[in-house]
Length: 214
Image (cartoon, rainbow, N blue to C red; front, side):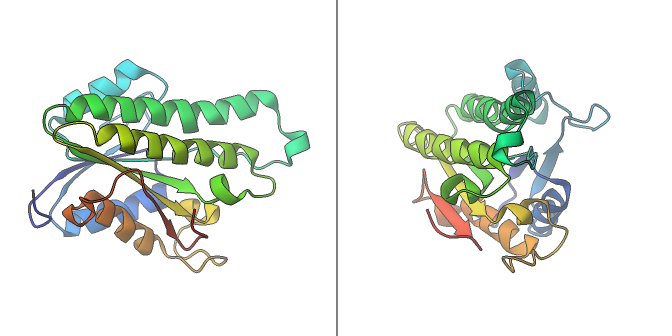
């Protein structure tokens, strides 16, 4: 499928400002975008911690071409003060939720191929102060992206899995992050590239956008 043809994209777990920018750029290019959220009042709601809920989401959407997943929890706290319950809760969302999303996408892509794009913080590779859950979740998501990309390459047609790493503030920013100078549109462009045919040669790769490389 060429990039000039409409694709079906599912966005799950992205912060609201970033999800809005990604959806806007996709819609401008003529793609069909489904934004899934844990909000029970949303048109496409799901429980990120339940495998059956992910399966039901993809079944309701129909044939999907690209799935975009991201870290969704980031409690700020000095490491020594981090509450264990909160640490587990955040990593349930960032690691377990995204694992189940990747797993369900793999099943949805069987026999037809597809692309998964993950969005995480560069703190998962370089560390950060007062961000133990975000660093752990993003680091785990980065390795899940690499492992899934290798496994997806063994499928016919291929399932491509790649990720974007950016400054953690930008994941929740409303415009341009003052620290990195990266705009949400630039992150959205990286997502579109990885979900398009121009990235057909890539899998298991992590692309830094306004953040130090892997």
